Length: 318
Image (tube, rainbow, N blue to C red; front, side, top):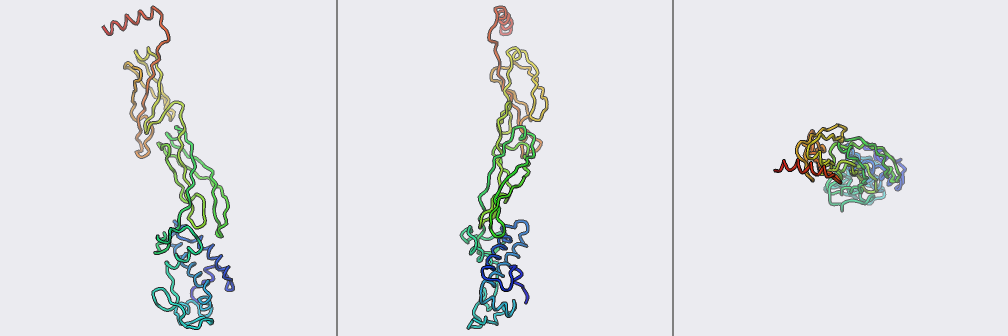
Protein backbone atom coordinates (compact mmCIF):
# COMPACT_ATOMS: atom_id res chain seq x y z
CA UNK A 1 0.00 0.00 0.00
CA UNK A 2 2.98 2.33 0.40
CA UNK A 3 2.31 5.22 2.74
CA UNK A 4 -0.03 4.35 5.61
CA UNK A 5 -2.08 7.51 5.98
CA UNK A 6 -4.12 6.01 8.81
CA UNK A 7 -0.98 5.32 10.82
CA UNK A 8 0.42 8.80 10.12
CA UNK A 9 -2.81 10.40 11.34
CA UNK A 10 -3.09 7.87 14.18
CA UNK A 11 -6.68 6.86 13.41
CA UNK A 12 -8.29 3.52 12.61
CA UNK A 13 -9.50 2.55 9.12
CA UNK A 14 -13.11 3.04 10.23
CA UNK A 15 -12.43 6.51 11.70
CA UNK A 16 -15.18 9.05 11.17
CA UNK A 17 -14.69 12.43 9.51
CA UNK A 18 -14.74 14.02 12.97
CA UNK A 19 -12.08 11.57 14.23
CA UNK A 20 -9.87 12.52 11.29
CA UNK A 21 -10.29 16.25 11.97
CA UNK A 22 -9.54 15.93 15.68
CA UNK A 23 -6.43 13.88 15.11
CA UNK A 24 -5.15 16.22 12.41
CA UNK A 25 -5.65 19.24 14.66
CA UNK A 26 -3.81 17.61 17.55
CA UNK A 27 -0.87 16.41 15.47
CA UNK A 28 -0.40 19.53 13.39
CA UNK A 29 -0.30 21.70 16.52
CA UNK A 30 2.54 19.50 17.72
CA UNK A 31 4.53 19.39 14.49
CA UNK A 32 4.05 22.78 12.84
CA UNK A 33 7.57 24.09 11.98
CA UNK A 34 6.95 27.36 13.82
CA UNK A 35 6.57 25.34 17.01
CA UNK A 36 9.76 23.34 16.51
CA UNK A 37 12.61 25.80 16.14
CA UNK A 38 15.19 23.20 17.20
CA UNK A 39 14.22 20.27 14.95
CA UNK A 40 12.84 22.29 12.05
CA UNK A 41 13.66 19.81 9.26
CA UNK A 42 12.01 16.90 11.08
CA UNK A 43 8.99 19.08 11.86
CA UNK A 44 8.67 20.16 8.21
CA UNK A 45 8.55 16.55 7.06
CA UNK A 46 6.11 15.48 9.77
CA UNK A 47 3.89 18.51 9.09
CA UNK A 48 3.74 17.71 5.39
CA UNK A 49 3.01 13.99 6.01
CA UNK A 50 0.22 14.79 8.48
CA UNK A 51 -1.34 17.34 6.11
CA UNK A 52 -1.12 14.92 3.18
CA UNK A 53 -2.79 12.19 5.23
CA UNK A 54 -5.55 14.59 6.22
CA UNK A 55 -6.06 15.76 2.64
CA UNK A 56 -6.63 12.16 1.55
CA UNK A 57 -8.65 10.84 4.48
CA UNK A 58 -10.90 13.89 4.76
CA UNK A 59 -11.97 13.63 1.10
CA UNK A 60 -14.48 10.77 0.63
CA UNK A 61 -13.51 10.02 -2.99
CA UNK A 62 -9.75 10.13 -2.41
CA UNK A 63 -10.19 7.97 0.69
CA UNK A 64 -12.19 5.37 -1.26
CA UNK A 65 -9.54 5.14 -3.96
CA UNK A 66 -6.79 4.91 -1.35
CA UNK A 67 -8.65 2.17 0.55
CA UNK A 68 -9.14 0.15 -2.65
CA UNK A 69 -5.92 0.75 -4.56
CA UNK A 70 -3.44 2.16 -2.06
CA UNK A 71 -1.05 5.08 -2.44
CA UNK A 72 0.14 4.11 -5.94
CA UNK A 73 -3.40 3.78 -7.19
CA UNK A 74 -4.30 7.15 -5.73
CA UNK A 75 -1.33 8.96 -7.22
CA UNK A 76 -1.48 7.26 -10.62
CA UNK A 77 -4.87 8.75 -11.44
CA UNK A 78 -5.88 5.51 -13.16
CA UNK A 79 -8.67 4.65 -10.75
CA UNK A 80 -11.95 6.28 -9.80
CA UNK A 81 -13.92 5.86 -6.63
CA UNK A 82 -16.95 3.57 -6.96
CA UNK A 83 -19.20 6.57 -6.39
CA UNK A 84 -17.42 8.64 -9.08
CA UNK A 85 -18.82 8.65 -12.62
CA UNK A 86 -15.60 9.82 -14.19
CA UNK A 87 -12.39 7.86 -14.01
CA UNK A 88 -10.13 10.89 -13.75
CA UNK A 89 -12.32 13.04 -11.52
CA UNK A 90 -9.45 15.05 -10.03
CA UNK A 91 -6.30 16.71 -11.28
CA UNK A 92 -3.06 16.98 -9.35
CA UNK A 93 -1.03 20.14 -8.79
CA UNK A 94 0.88 21.02 -11.94
CA UNK A 95 -1.77 19.72 -14.35
CA UNK A 96 -1.06 15.98 -14.23
CA UNK A 97 -3.76 13.41 -13.40
CA UNK A 98 -3.77 11.78 -10.01
CA UNK A 99 -3.15 12.98 -6.51
CA UNK A 100 -0.11 15.13 -5.84
CA UNK A 101 0.80 16.95 -2.65
CA UNK A 102 3.24 19.74 -1.81
CA UNK A 103 4.39 21.93 1.05
CA UNK A 104 2.08 24.61 -0.33
CA UNK A 105 -0.90 22.27 0.11
CA UNK A 106 0.10 21.69 3.71
CA UNK A 107 0.24 25.42 4.46
CA UNK A 108 -3.13 25.99 2.80
CA UNK A 109 -4.85 23.32 4.88
CA UNK A 110 -3.55 24.66 8.19
CA UNK A 111 -5.46 28.00 8.20
CA UNK A 112 -8.76 26.11 7.88
CA UNK A 113 -8.31 25.08 11.50
CA UNK A 114 -6.31 27.88 13.10
CA UNK A 115 -6.56 31.63 12.92
CA UNK A 116 -3.77 34.11 13.59
CA UNK A 117 -1.99 33.90 10.26
CA UNK A 118 -0.47 37.00 8.72
CA UNK A 119 -3.02 37.29 5.99
CA UNK A 120 -1.72 34.16 4.27
CA UNK A 121 0.88 36.27 2.49
CA UNK A 122 4.13 35.42 4.24
CA UNK A 123 6.26 32.33 4.25
CA UNK A 124 6.19 29.81 7.00
CA UNK A 125 9.40 29.23 8.90
CA UNK A 126 9.29 25.76 7.43
CA UNK A 127 10.27 27.22 4.07
CA UNK A 128 6.98 26.52 2.23
CA UNK A 129 5.86 29.23 -0.15
CA UNK A 130 2.36 30.72 -0.11
CA UNK A 131 1.36 29.75 3.44
CA UNK A 132 1.01 32.26 6.28
CA UNK A 133 3.46 32.44 9.10
CA UNK A 134 2.03 31.87 12.55
CA UNK A 135 1.80 35.01 14.59
CA UNK A 136 3.51 35.01 17.96
CA UNK A 137 1.51 35.24 21.15
CA UNK A 138 1.92 38.45 23.13
CA UNK A 139 5.03 38.53 25.30
CA UNK A 140 4.79 38.41 29.09
CA UNK A 141 6.88 40.94 31.01
CA UNK A 142 7.96 40.69 34.64
CA UNK A 143 9.92 43.31 36.55
CA UNK A 144 13.11 41.96 38.12
CA UNK A 145 14.06 44.12 41.14
CA UNK A 146 17.85 44.33 41.53
CA UNK A 147 20.00 46.14 44.05
CA UNK A 148 22.93 48.18 42.85
CA UNK A 149 25.19 45.65 44.55
CA UNK A 150 23.72 42.86 42.38
CA UNK A 151 24.16 44.91 39.23
CA UNK A 152 27.76 45.65 40.23
CA UNK A 153 28.79 42.08 41.02
CA UNK A 154 26.26 40.12 38.96
CA UNK A 155 23.96 37.45 40.38
CA UNK A 156 21.89 34.37 39.61
CA UNK A 157 18.23 34.64 40.43
CA UNK A 158 15.69 31.83 40.54
CA UNK A 159 12.28 33.07 39.48
CA UNK A 160 9.02 31.13 39.74
CA UNK A 161 6.74 31.96 36.81
CA UNK A 162 3.25 30.84 35.83
CA UNK A 163 2.05 30.57 32.26
CA UNK A 164 -0.80 29.13 30.22
CA UNK A 165 0.00 26.20 27.93
CA UNK A 166 -2.14 24.23 25.49
CA UNK A 167 -2.13 20.47 25.18
CA UNK A 168 -2.33 18.73 21.80
CA UNK A 169 -6.10 19.12 21.76
CA UNK A 170 -5.88 22.85 22.43
CA UNK A 171 -7.06 22.67 26.04
CA UNK A 172 -5.42 25.35 28.23
CA UNK A 173 -3.85 24.74 31.63
CA UNK A 174 -1.59 26.70 33.98
CA UNK A 175 1.90 25.47 34.72
CA UNK A 176 4.62 26.81 36.99
CA UNK A 177 8.32 26.72 36.24
CA UNK A 178 11.49 27.95 37.92
CA UNK A 179 13.74 29.91 35.58
CA UNK A 180 17.31 30.90 36.39
CA UNK A 181 18.12 34.48 35.41
CA UNK A 182 21.81 35.34 35.14
CA UNK A 183 22.22 39.05 35.90
CA UNK A 184 25.41 40.27 34.26
CA UNK A 185 27.67 42.84 35.98
CA UNK A 186 26.96 46.32 34.69
CA UNK A 187 23.44 45.77 33.35
CA UNK A 188 21.36 48.92 33.51
CA UNK A 189 17.85 49.74 34.59
CA UNK A 190 15.44 48.62 31.86
CA UNK A 191 17.69 45.88 30.46
CA UNK A 192 15.53 43.04 29.11
CA UNK A 193 16.28 39.33 29.46
CA UNK A 194 14.21 37.22 27.06
CA UNK A 195 13.29 33.56 27.46
CA UNK A 196 12.05 32.57 24.02
CA UNK A 197 8.62 30.89 23.93
CA UNK A 198 8.40 30.66 27.74
CA UNK A 199 5.31 32.87 27.81
CA UNK A 200 1.64 32.07 27.36
CA UNK A 201 0.29 29.84 24.60
CA UNK A 202 -2.61 30.96 22.42
CA UNK A 203 -4.63 29.15 19.80
CA UNK A 204 -3.31 29.70 16.31
CA UNK A 205 -0.06 31.21 17.51
CA UNK A 206 3.43 30.20 18.52
CA UNK A 207 4.13 30.58 22.26
CA UNK A 208 4.95 34.09 23.40
CA UNK A 209 8.25 35.10 24.97
CA UNK A 210 8.82 35.72 28.65
CA UNK A 211 10.76 38.91 29.35
CA UNK A 212 12.34 40.03 32.62
CA UNK A 213 13.00 43.76 32.88
CA UNK A 214 15.75 44.96 35.23
CA UNK A 215 14.32 47.30 37.89
CA UNK A 216 17.23 49.01 39.64
CA UNK A 217 16.49 49.89 43.25
CA UNK A 218 17.90 53.03 44.94
CA UNK A 219 21.06 52.58 46.99
CA UNK A 220 21.49 54.32 50.37
CA UNK A 221 24.99 55.58 49.55
CA UNK A 222 25.69 55.37 45.84
CA UNK A 223 23.84 56.89 42.92
CA UNK A 224 24.34 55.62 39.40
CA UNK A 225 24.88 57.87 36.41
CA UNK A 226 25.32 55.67 33.34
CA UNK A 227 28.52 53.73 34.01
CA UNK A 228 29.67 56.14 36.74
CA UNK A 229 28.95 55.95 40.45
CA UNK A 230 28.39 59.09 42.51
CA UNK A 231 28.85 59.34 46.25
CA UNK A 232 28.32 62.41 48.43
CA UNK A 233 31.00 62.82 51.07
CA UNK A 234 30.70 65.16 54.03
CA UNK A 235 33.95 66.71 55.18
CA UNK A 236 34.68 69.16 57.96
CA UNK A 237 36.06 72.59 57.18
CA UNK A 238 39.23 71.62 59.01
CA UNK A 239 39.72 68.50 56.87
CA UNK A 240 38.78 70.43 53.75
CA UNK A 241 41.61 72.84 54.47
CA UNK A 242 44.23 70.50 55.90
CA UNK A 243 43.48 67.19 54.15
CA UNK A 244 42.75 63.62 55.30
CA UNK A 245 42.37 60.06 54.05
CA UNK A 246 38.85 58.93 53.16
CA UNK A 247 37.84 55.30 53.63
CA UNK A 248 35.11 54.35 51.19
CA UNK A 249 33.48 50.93 51.09
CA UNK A 250 32.94 49.82 47.49
CA UNK A 251 29.94 47.87 46.22
CA UNK A 252 32.01 44.68 46.12
CA UNK A 253 33.09 45.09 49.75
CA UNK A 254 36.60 46.56 49.33
CA UNK A 255 37.92 49.42 51.44
CA UNK A 256 39.04 52.16 49.09
CA UNK A 257 41.51 54.64 50.63
CA UNK A 258 41.31 58.05 48.97
CA UNK A 259 43.89 60.64 50.12
CA UNK A 260 42.73 64.27 50.20
CA UNK A 261 45.69 66.60 49.91
CA UNK A 262 44.36 69.62 48.05
CA UNK A 263 42.01 72.17 49.57
CA UNK A 264 38.42 71.07 49.08
CA UNK A 265 35.96 73.79 48.16
CA UNK A 266 32.16 73.47 48.50
CA UNK A 267 30.78 71.57 45.49
CA UNK A 268 34.19 70.12 44.60
CA UNK A 269 34.13 66.76 42.76
CA UNK A 270 36.96 64.25 42.75
CA UNK A 271 37.09 61.57 40.05
CA UNK A 272 38.56 58.11 40.75
CA UNK A 273 39.19 56.29 37.48
CA UNK A 274 37.84 52.77 36.89
CA UNK A 275 36.00 52.52 40.24
CA UNK A 276 32.50 52.94 38.84
CA UNK A 277 30.08 50.34 37.47
CA UNK A 278 31.36 47.51 35.27
CA UNK A 279 30.75 48.15 31.58
CA UNK A 280 28.82 45.08 30.43
CA UNK A 281 29.92 45.36 26.80
CA UNK A 282 33.58 45.92 27.73
CA UNK A 283 34.61 43.22 30.24
CA UNK A 284 37.33 44.34 32.63
CA UNK A 285 36.50 48.00 32.21
CA UNK A 286 34.58 50.18 34.67
CA UNK A 287 33.19 53.67 34.72
CA UNK A 288 34.43 56.25 37.23
CA UNK A 289 33.70 56.94 40.87
CA UNK A 290 32.81 60.58 41.40
CA UNK A 291 33.06 61.93 44.95
CA UNK A 292 31.06 65.09 45.55
CA UNK A 293 32.04 66.96 48.70
CA UNK A 294 29.80 68.74 51.16
CA UNK A 295 31.97 70.94 53.37
CA UNK A 296 30.57 71.24 56.89
CA UNK A 297 31.12 74.70 58.35
CA UNK A 298 31.12 75.11 62.13
CA UNK A 299 27.89 76.48 63.59
CA UNK A 300 29.79 78.93 65.86
CA UNK A 301 33.33 80.11 66.66
CA UNK A 302 34.73 81.56 69.85
CA UNK A 303 36.45 84.94 69.74
CA UNK A 304 39.81 83.24 70.19
CA UNK A 305 39.12 80.85 67.30
CA UNK A 306 38.15 83.72 65.06
CA UNK A 307 41.31 85.57 66.02
CA UNK A 308 43.45 82.52 65.26
CA UNK A 309 41.78 82.01 61.87
CA UNK A 310 42.31 85.66 60.93
CA UNK A 311 45.91 85.43 61.97
CA UNK A 312 46.56 82.18 60.03
CA UNK A 313 44.60 83.01 56.93
CA UNK A 314 45.87 86.55 56.94
CA UNK A 315 49.39 85.27 56.64
CA UNK A 316 48.39 82.93 53.82
CA UNK A 317 46.61 85.55 51.77
CA UNK A 318 48.97 88.39 52.66
